[in-house]
Length: 407
Ligand SMILES: NC(=O)NCCC[C@H](N)C(=O)O
Picture (tube, rainbow, N blue to C red):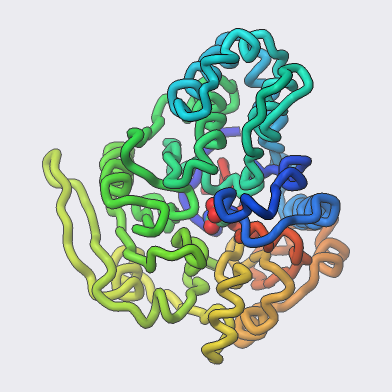
């Protein structure tokens, strides 16, 4: 299957996920802030919720669609000695404060599975007396990279807690055959800059949105823009958003639900002005033009009116409450077919006003399990249980890295 993503909503063909494992049980609440969790997660329930979410994806995806568990891909990649050696070298160099050079020889002797356990959980019985923090945010695969058109933008996280994930992704793209084509157009960001996948939204083949957020620095955004413009994107919209924990990426306050509809957290999107810069290429340099609002920018560049549906509905408190629990972070399986956490009831009610049929995960699977093609031209908002997953502070879009969508 050819890997390419030219839209946020066209039919999902292939996606990378991580069903949470033991690493989430290793989060000590004393370290939760440093590990970017707002609470501790109960692994078993989180895993069940995640696997149930994948059942929704399978129901809607075409027969030749593929859902990859990222750990399976890492294991395949680490079968190659060269990939393991590259990865270990990068770990040592990019995390000097961890003193991993002292165990370099032990690391090089590890089998693929032990190396992966060490990296994800922070320790392995195969190496005695050396422990790191786990990487519990691996379930938010979105943030590791973004496939844009036929290129791949590798994230450079702002937070140390997510750096190991980025190094894993670096190795995967370099060595796994799945990425053979995409890796020819890899966009890399240097160590001093930062960008995370949750800030990158592929509005169309020509237009990409990048949040300037708590996690994506101005220089990271410019570097990414340069790479995207060189690889066929015509315009990048830099969207300035509040730099705060509760909306750490653009996709926590804004996502597309259909070709002409999106969900937005009003205080940070529709009520903001003068927060958009359109960037385009001009004979080797980058042109910048200010646009008053995201609505106007999308109308100009997508040549259509977009309907902005309010996360949380009209009530102020509900808007804040449901943004907090990822109400604005929906994931589209096809145009108008979206999934989001069931607890965001006011957001679902608002979607209903705009013609979305509301369905819980069980009803959806029952109704469409044998005929995903029936989803064409429908608008369905599918709710799924995620009260445990939600404690990690990410929603359905955060938990997915689409690598192929229909043209
Ligand atoms: N795209 C996203 O918004 N991802 C959610 C990331 C949550 C994670 N705990 C973090 O703070 O990085």
